[in-house]
Image 1 (cartoon, rainbow, N blue to C red):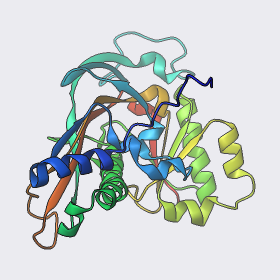
Image 2: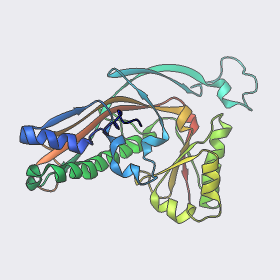
Image 3: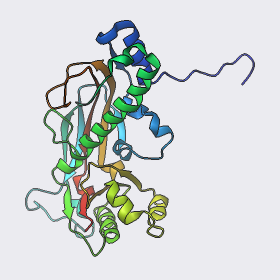
Image 4: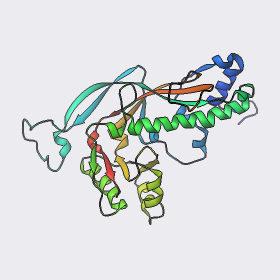
Length: 287
């Protein structure tokens, strides 16, 4: 760097931006961001842990709806014979398009009133509590969101097959990887409950190193039930369409969010998860 150049200052964190707004607007503070703030959780800089969104490819969506393609096995008998369909099942897939609506994912915290006069502490509170809760809410949405007015997750996606357990958890996991490849995909992601990750996979020979060397990414999340694992071709078979819009604001929390009244702040992102190839995802029982 030359004497005339200066290092570009890092962008302020979402928490700091919101704290600055609180200093000016008090309890009326509301901030809009032109990026998805779940990617800004400070813990990601120090901990090599992949969030569920990190398994998928992410595409910017400019509107409230996006058109996407998807494939599925035929609903009825084939109208004509297809060559080598036994070898390549995807040869008989049927092609479709549809529209996906970007939907909100939200998270809430209650702010101790004393923090309103302490911008530095308020900023870290937002960054380390609201953002992590929003990341957790996004993990839940992408894994098991029920759809409707919210994101529909992989576990609720029609056409995603279930596999029975094999002789042991590692065999069950690898059998699911094999099934993805037998359908013409490449198993590049695993979503597993932390209890199973530490019980069955950590320290089991070179398993994790082998998977890493093959480009398989593993996300640990409570949103997959213990004893179950999601294996798939996350890169080719699904997409997160991301609005790139987020917000943090004071708001009145709906019933059921907190055990008692308090000053509430809401964080929100907008996205859609579309599954192009449900045949390239498997939910496998480990035991």
